[in-house]
Length: 127
Image: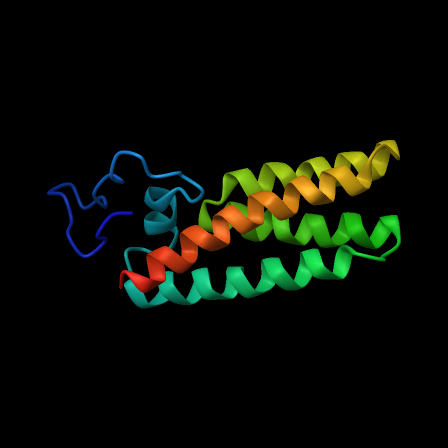
């Protein structure tokens, strides 16, 4: 993680520390929140809850609803820079369209979301 309170001279956030898992593109998030730390914390917390809720609702849902839930999560993930989650959600949509291993795609989405949620928890704890 990096300390978003420090800024480079060009106004961009500092680069993440080496070894950061990059579950979230914090430079993208910084741009999307216009450097507002309070807004950043709020959207990360919202995404954390949303990811858990939407993926949880996928279990036992009809394929069309699974695709709709994945589509919603994909948009939210892109907004905060969680591009791994967005890609995994897109794979769920594709699996539903192809009627091919939706369960496996949802599991991969869950794993991507877990990694991202852990990154969010660590980031919020560091604040």
